[in-house]
Every structure is written in C-alpha cells, then in structure tokens.
Length: 97
Image (cartoon, rainbow, N blue to C red; front, side, top):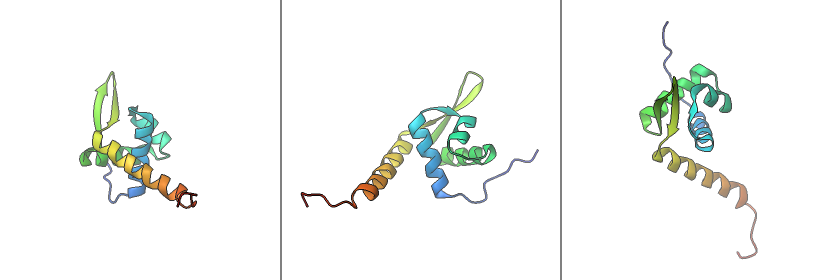
C-alpha cells in the first residue's frame, strides 16, 4: 500500500481543522475528520502537517491515537477567532465612536 503524501495544502483547511481541535479538545482522527468535514486520508495528511509545524501533538491513549492542540495552536486559533469576530461585529458603528 502506497501512502499518499500531501502535494499542496490549503491554509483554510488547516485553520478549520485546528479550530475543530480547539473547540473539541483531544480527539481521535476519525472524529476530527468527521467534524472538519474532511475525508479520513486528507485529515490524516493535514494532521501530520500540523504536527510537523508544532500546532498539534499525537499521543497514544489506550489502543487509539489521539491528537491534542499545543499552546502554539491555541494562540493561532485565538488570533483567528478574534479577527473573525472583529470582521463580523466592527462593521456596525457604535454610539461611542
């Protein structure tokens, strides 16, 4: 069986997968793929990329491999969520301005 490698990656998919991990905590690969709306093979490839970049860690709990988000991943998610919040709600002028 030939293992598929990621030829190119989409930053939006990386951020979406990281956000799912941020919201749900530690998860198995199957659950992450389901929640991020990715195929299993694509999810595993992106998880390997995120682990290489230092945003997630892989641990073996019981018979399963579980992925946890690192401190760097949490900081990236907080920045991403803050930017999205600002884009969504700062378009409305406030009375104080």
